[in-house]
Image (cartoon, rainbow, N blue to C red; front, side):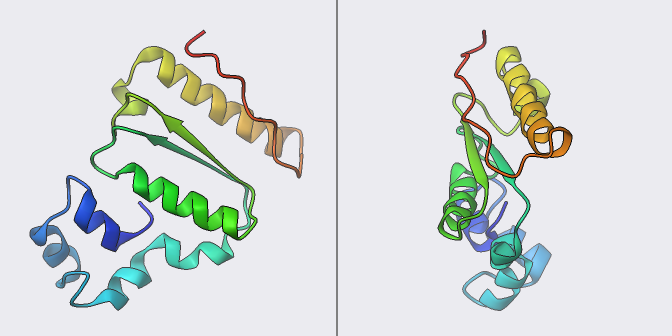
Length: 133
């Protein structure tokens, strides 16, 4: 979740009660509180290489959340990669298709290995598409 105002209108947790309960206002009533609490507001400060993983069928936090941060960071020329996972929901890492859960872990391992173990500075090559193999 990167933009709370977008979340209020797109995710399955959204709705009038959620905004009222957490912020005592809707995004159109107090946009400043939503901006202040949204990570996207601080995107310019992001310097750490970021692997964004998002399931395409996630109804809790829709793919728009990932795409928005990815596009913002790319525009700012930050090291970022977006891994879209087809056919999975918000539960990808807990109860998703086994081969996709494994692939998810492989991508995380390789990302951290590239930057933290090998100490690389440049973006890693795009991963091979193994489609569960």
